[in-house]
Length: 446
Image (cartoon, rainbow, N blue to C red; front, side, top):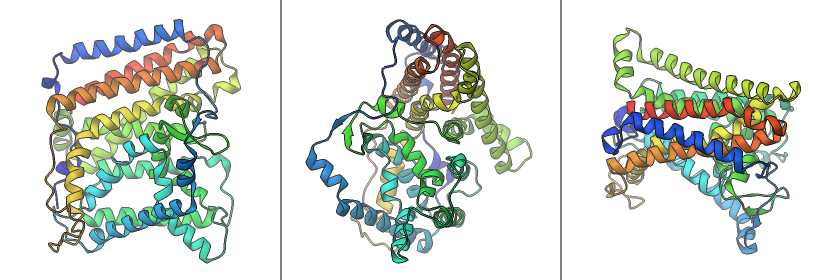
C-alpha cells in the first residue's frame, strides 16, 4: 500500500521559500490583526452583518428552478450512490497496494475536496450523502416519513454526536496505525455506516444533520459560500460573511469547531522534526503518543477559546445568563480560521495526490482496465511550487484570522453594551493573535 507519509503529506513550502524570516512574519501577522482591530473599533461601530442570514439577492429563476427540481435532486442522489458503489469496488475488491485509490478517495477527494466545494456551493454533502439516500429509499419502501424515527432526539443533544464522529475521523486520518490500508479503512467505514443508519432509523433523517461528520463539516464551511438560502428557503446570492454570521449557536457547535481547528494544528505538529523524534524515542506505541498529542492540542485550543470568551463576557459586562452563551455566539468566528488552516495544510495534497487518485479510480480493481479514461493521467505540478505554496499558506492563515477578528467584532456589538463592546473584544483579539502565532510556528515547524 502507498506509504502513509505519502498519502497524508500536505506541504511543499517552507521558511526558505519566503523573502522574510519567521520572526518577521509572526510580528507582521500579529500587527496586522492589531491594526485591523483598531480600525474596526473606529470605523465599524454598529452591527452590519445579517445575524439571521435572511437577506441576499435571489438567483435567476431558471437556475433556482433547476437546482430545486426533484429531478435534479434525485440525479445528485443517484450520483452519490454511484460514486459510493465505485468506491466500494476498490475498498472490497481492489488490491491492498499503492495502486488502490481507496485511501486517496477518502482522505483527499472526500475530506479535503469537500472544503473548496462547500466554500463555493454550500453544504453539498447533504445532497449527495449516499447513506442519507439509502435511508430515504428504505423509508419510502416502508412507506414511512424519513424525517420521523422511533423516538425524538432531545434538542439538548445538538451536534455533540458530530463532534464525537468528527474526532473519530480525524483520529483515523492522523493517528490510527496503518490508516491507509484497506482493513483499517473498512472497519472505520463499517462502524460509521452502522452508527449513521441505525441513528437515522431511531431518530429520523435529522440524525445526519447532527451526527454525520462529513455533513456537519460541509455545512459549517458552506456557511461561507456565496450561494445560500434566505429565510423563506429561496436560493440567493449573499455576502459570505452574512452567511457565516447566520450560524446559530447550538449544543456541540463549539466542540465541533474546536476539533476541526485543533486537529489541523496537530497535523502540522505531527510533521515537525521535534515531534517525530519524541514519538520515536519515548518508548510508547506511536498510536498512543499520537492519540495523546491529538487530545492535548484540541484541549489546548478549547481551553484558550473558553478562557478568552469568558474574559470577553466579563469585560463586556454581559448579562450572567447571556454570558454562558458567549462561546456559542462567537464560535462562527473560528470557522474561517479553521478553513484557512485546511487550505494551507492540504492545498498541495489536493492538487498532487488528488490528480493521482483520479487516475487510479479508472481501475479500482487493479485489473489493468481504464474504465474512466483517466488511467494515463500524470499529475500536473504547475500549480504547486515551493514559493507559491508557502505564500498561499501564509496568506490564507492570516486572512482566516482577519475574517475571524471581523466576525468576532461584529458579534460583540450585538452581545455587549455599546460602551464596553470594544473592551470586551480584547481577549478575543489576544486569542486570534495566539492562534495566528501558533499556526505560523506549526506551519514552519512542519
